[in-house]
Length: 327
Image (cartoon, rainbow, N blue to C red; front, top):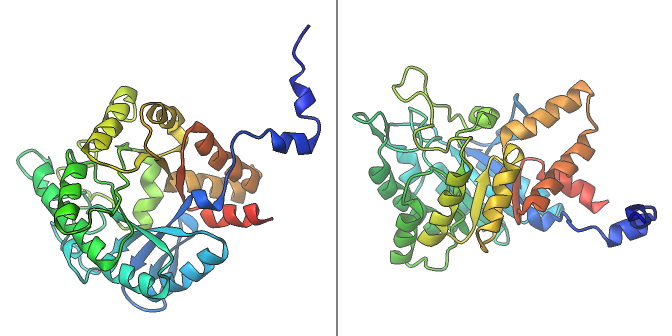
């Protein structure tokens, strides 16, 4: 006798009753990109539906997000002036600090996560201060700056800090800086297994954060992870847990489903994934070409992240997914 699995699939009500994995608007964090000025909402060519916005437009956008029951955003900044150390990122009146204050004033109930890195703020496009002798980012000097940046974000009203620079020891250093400044209860969501991925291309358009051509460090492979390394990815996340991270993350998501499951199997901490710009843009362009059912593929992709083990999904699709979930 063979097993008739189809008995449980024929009736749609029974299918719904037995569904193992579910998506909810509670799963999503929506990325927003802030720049100075007023009335600015510039769509990014490589990411249809994604915008660089002035602070007043971000405040307006939060009203729309709340209508969709999206309760959390992650902020990225585009400063007017970039320099070798990313000074705007460690200024109490930098673009992110000002954005946090404005959003919190208008939307005290919006949960604000801040991306903690320097690639958007440096004139060379790398994630910290350059060590010219080693031709890479100076890990320990950058740690000090990350700690300063975290405290500035905390004082401005951030609800969670998300360090993304892949510096060794960043969680321990940031935790120490926050605790010593009276922010013991502010959680850290670490980009704990972040790969040197080609999927980030469109993000660098919207965040204006590409490593500058002609610089001795041509890419970020000396500090972000090799996409070929599975065991190292687990070790990176486990190490951040030991250092005090409250939530771990795998980035990118779509080509790293095995890593999501590996990390899920090696920790009891909540796990986030970043559904990155290249993943988003591929679906958008495929939809434009008429080769996929965009909404169906999008929702299947997001469901796949949950099935692989994610608790939180950072995604540019979040608004569209929320509209579908409301139907």
